[in-house]
Length: 322
Image (cartoon, rainbow, N blue to C red; front, side, top):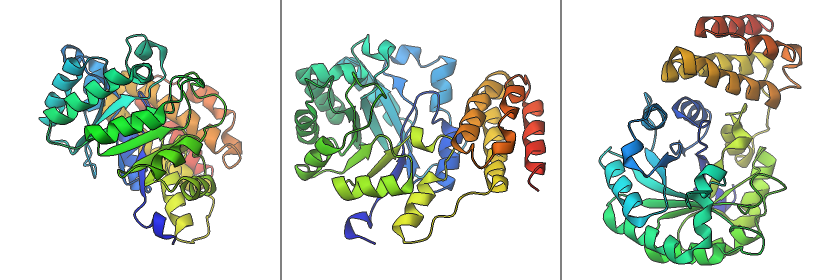
């Protein structure tokens, strides 16, 4: 094992509505070191909403409890950080990377990258208001003419941020094109805090290429693990020199049959059925060559309206390979 990979950390990257507590639980079981909550608003008067409560709720014991918050005002986001700290957490992460229009329209997420002074004010305010470590998740900049990640990283380190994760795209890129890791490598060369690379990590081979190129402290993996939560373990096995073995249909379906009931339990019958549809679709898409016999089956699955019906069809799929 190369020295720079000996303390590698693989993190379930927060994705609102996707990397919820059930997904983090499965990903951690299959190799992730820890996860971070889905992004919640810093407007604490909205925390009683069902959506925020579900994002804060977890029936699982996670290695680290980290809550990610987003906001545009130092005072508001500081109040949220203080309230988070009361929930027996290990760290807080500030989101300055979300490209979603509804987030950027309120000058939160990656929209903050256009105002370096506001970035500094928010980071200093939050770090000084809580005793737990504060992390930052961000992007290369607002657009290709304003890639200011070097300055943002410097501000983060000087403000007392303990860990920095960088997605290799600008906000204007959204998720289009290929992630770029040149500036991430440059940030790492000039930083004394842990820096994590994020973006387009879809295989163990690609993960190692990115780690070798950037010398990152670890990886944040989100979209690349959808339908393949065992990607984290594949990366660790690959680093250890083990030969990668493709999952069998039976193994994939066993994981699906483990994951989907957790979604039902987390969200309840109505929302659980709808969230389960998303994840089953990702499993089928990500493993279409292995589960080719089930290619047509999602249409019928998507029409099911109860948890019991969904579990029954999943079990019937598994029987095809038993």
